[in-house]
Length: 177
Image (cartoon, rainbow, N blue to C red; front, side):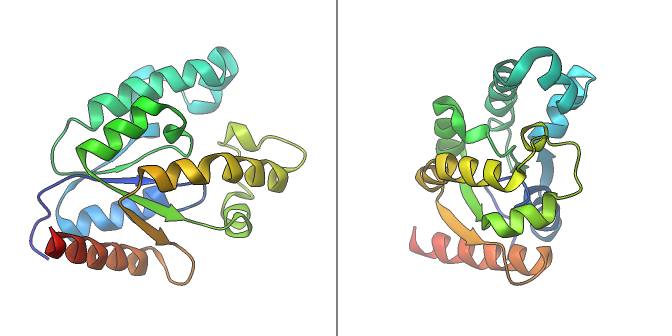
């Protein structure tokens, strides 16, 4: 595929592989890669668990909304968003209108496997992470689907395989336009 001329925004739950797949995709398509969570940390000088502790989820979501608005105005990037970015209507609108949104669909069982030892996820610091992931998926899955142009399952293959499938889906979508 020639250099992709638009933006690709990855959405999906924690553990979907947005950052890992995003890096692969950006390399394969020769685009800049940006991770909205890393951008928030760089701008605040604090990690996400600290922001959640001090400002709560609402404070974090306000910061995230501002960063998503700025990042989606850039050109020719692959953007990995945080799992909850789609909770705000303005984020959904900016993502959908300013690029191609790919929903990395990942079942709860796989999310649990991939996040089991990660202490950097404030929403999973709970006695029952499976229950929490199930609740989040029930709430967020319809929003991911509403925002997405492409829905890409992530099970079955590594990050490179998923990135190749995304490229094929982008090519097919481009051929239709």
